[in-house]
Amino acid sequence: MKKFCIIICMKKKFLISLISLVLLTGCGQYYDDTDSVYPLGMNIFNFKIKVLDNDNPQNVIMPFDTSIFIKRYQKNNNFNDISVLFNETFQKLHVYFDVNYKYSINGDKINNLKVINESYGQNEFLEIPFELYDIIDKSIDFSILSKGKYNIAIGELATLWNNYIINSENNYSKSIPSEEEIKLALSNTPKYDELNKLIELKEENNKYFIKFNKLDGYEKVSLSLGAVGKGYANDVMKELLNDEQGYISSGESLITFLSKPIGDYWNLKLTNPLYMKKYKMKEDYQKYNYTELKIQKNDKFSISTSGDYERFFYDDNKTIYHHIIDPISGYPSGLKNDYSFTSISAITEHGIYADMITTALMNMNLEDGMNFVKEIENKYQTSIYPIWLEENNNKITAYVDNNLLNDVSLDNENNNRNITTIKSVKH
Image (cartoon, rainbow, N blue to C red; front, side):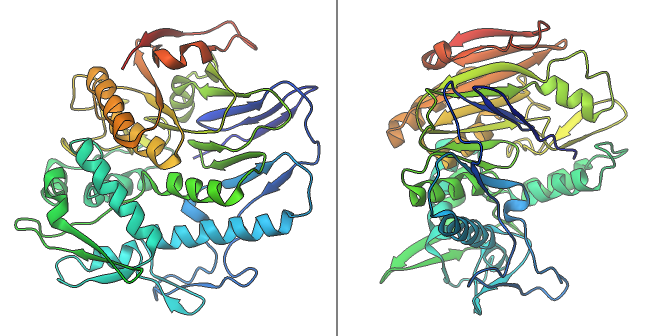
């Protein structure tokens, strides 16, 4: 996947362009020599990670297999301390949540998600790190609240579709998963009301344990944290950074904002899904704007975006098969339903909720999605501001939460080719 990274310095603005989100700081001065902290790979400082799988010789990992960095706007003397903290935190959490490899950290073997998945049906408790216990606990709760529209036990389905995406050439594939493959993966995807039987969690003497029980009728089950891992990591890092000014960028679709710089507000732009899909499918993308919507906020928050244009492949019929899978139908969201969204963003206080919410909302119609958002707000005592983008005949309708409406506008700064209509919704 080709990534755009454009940095433009202007008199009173600082612009960073990402695949899914475009960020500007607000009016005011900024430091020309801001710090950018990037993960530097394994085995730096005093933090030693080793991959234990014999068939994997790599010694360096990119946390969560994406580009992650912190942008800071203040001048101080703790750059090295922040760099060490950032690297160790994200590398450690990547190791905990990884489904592909086993690891040791500083010589100690880690019971990570891959080890948990391999323990399915072994009827034994494994001691796991607190962060892994915590994210699994939250993911089970969220799976049940969403009635399975988000499902932590979607691992077999996610792996099936991900393999086709990975093996496509320039986002094109002649073949798609067969009905038999999908039915097999579905047959190994437990329902949301079975999760508490599938997964047992316990805490004893400040240690944390999990037992991955075998369910009747399910031959092979695997857990996946792909939809929530980065959001959780951003939340952990946000707490560690206290009052740092700047933001954490975790890949193409998640940003967590810390304290503001001198400017009055954060100014974001959402990428136009039509532009990105046309570009990746080698069609006429230049007649579309790169961005369509602008969001202006002046507080701390996380924003996550899920869309059908980030990771996908298409076939000879130009049908797009993307990476957000409906756990009920077994197909990418929208393909087997009477509703379809090209993109959904959510603004909220916590990155993990933003990540899980957008995934679940992609598998719901608008009315059910609004009711679900209200339920989550009441359950977790937090505020959530969603934006649904619906595509029809190369036009986009943006359904914007009424409480966010005053902060959202069409992006008319650099073009006059807007193809988006904004509609207000209440939940």
